[in-house]
Image (cartoon, rainbow, N blue to C red):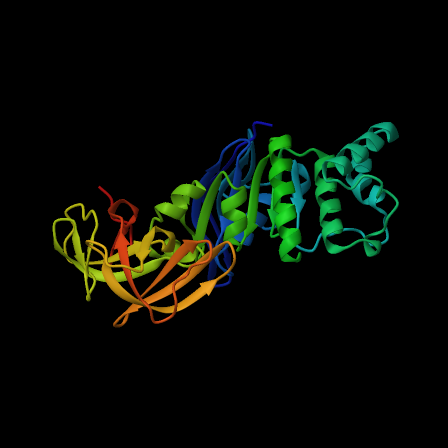
Length: 360
C-alpha cells in the first residue's frame, strides 16, 4: 500500500473565515500523520477536504497516482472514488443493522461474493479483537466496542488510505489507552497511509510517525514527535506541546551564550543573537536539589504535586515561576529552599519579536 497523499496550496473558506490557509504537505506512504491543534485550527476541515466530504476553494490533492481534486482543472472526485477508509468520532454505525451487515454494506456494493465477505468479516473482527460479535446490534455494545466495529468495517474494505477524525474522543481514559495500542498495531499490520485528527497531544506523540501542528488554518510545524517535542519551531508549538507545559522565560542576551531573565542568568547557546529573547525549557530538563549546588539558582518550592509515577514541583523566585518534573515521589516540602540547575543543551531560544526558534 505505497500510497502517498500530496496536498498543494490548499485553501478552504467558510464565508470570511479561512479554515485552511494555503496548506502544502506530503504524507509519505505507510506513514501515520497526525493533524494536531486546538479547536478551530482547521485540522478536521483539512481531513474532510482530503476525504472528499468538503470541496476546497483552491489547490490540488493527489492520492497515490490519482489527482482527486484540482480547482484549476475542474476535478473533484467524490469520496467513494478515492479509495479511502473513514472512521469518525461518532462511529457512524447503522443502528438497524447488526455487525455483519454494518461491515459488509460497502462490500455488497462492490458485488463481492458471500464467501469472500464472510472471510473479510472474520478477518477484520479478529484484528480488532471482536470475533463472535457478528449478530450484535450497535445498541447492544459499549462505546469502545462500537468503535472497534467501526475500525473493523474500515479494515474489511481494505482501503489504501485511513482517515480518522478524533475516533477516541468519546471513550474513557483507560479505553483510550487501549485503543491507541490497537490503532498503532493496526497501522503497523495494514501498512496503510494514515491521516489522524486529534486535539490530544498524547495520542499524537504516541502513535504518529509525523505530527503537523496547526493554528488558524496554517501548519506551524510538521516533523517527527521527537523533534516537535524537543525542538518546537515557534512559541505556539512549544506552549501547546507538553504536559506539564514548557517553561517560557522572557529575557535578553547579555553576552555570548548567556541570557538574563531578570533574577538570574541562564547559560544557553545564543547563536550570535542579540536583543530580547524567550528561553524555553521543559520541566523534566531542570535539575532540582535541596542542597546548594555550584552554578545553581536558589528558589522556593511553592507547591508539590505528586502523581505516583512522578512529581510536579512549582518553584518560585520573586515573580519568576518554574515547573519541574521529578520521577517518582519527591521528598521536597512546600516552602522548602531548592536549587535549580539548567543544562545548556536542553534549552531552546526564541526570538521575542518573530516567536521563531533560533538555531545556528
